[in-house]
Image (cartoon, rainbow, N blue to C red):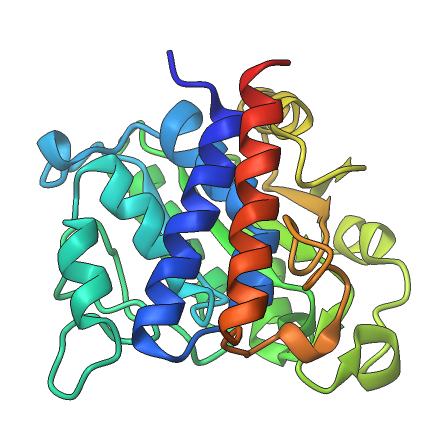
Length: 277
């Protein structure tokens, strides 16, 4: 059994290496969603390279597709991709390892990155599962800034209407986006009440970077019948190093040599601490 808390920090190191090699990447959001992806892929979801063609595999869509470097790290650890190949070729001219999900790669259900499309597409996947009487579950991760897209709320309305209890959405609530705080750019008001008004079961994850809290929330979502579930995961943008944490400027940034050294040192220290908890 993997130590998922430590693994999340190892995967952060892998993502930072990919960014440094490719000289590009959305590092802040990569760091904030790592525990979410780790818990989903290594504990919750029935998906692997071995069952990738199985119609009953669980589905995942990274709606906030710009956090692709975190997704590459997870897919490589899961065995879908080769980490060294990804790192060597990320964002190079003509490479298939681009900065957003590319469904020509194994393990990726759909292209994403044009914000607002992940949830409505997942609604379609969940409806198909219901109609075909299949057992799979559908998951998506959205950014909180992404919730300004109207298509999110069309999808939310449809998910409730069709009682899609096989659908679980996660909001990466780090409260920062490329141009500032979410409340300055487009105020979110009460996300919990808004999703409830659309007919969703809402779970607040007080610390969305805590594996134990995420595990409990995802297990609760599996038990909820008759309506879709959303996790409001309160995360820290740039989680893992004080160099990046809670700084909007690290939405899309490549660390210089000095920053890179400090970030990797901080991540390694937190990984070691997690191993000895």
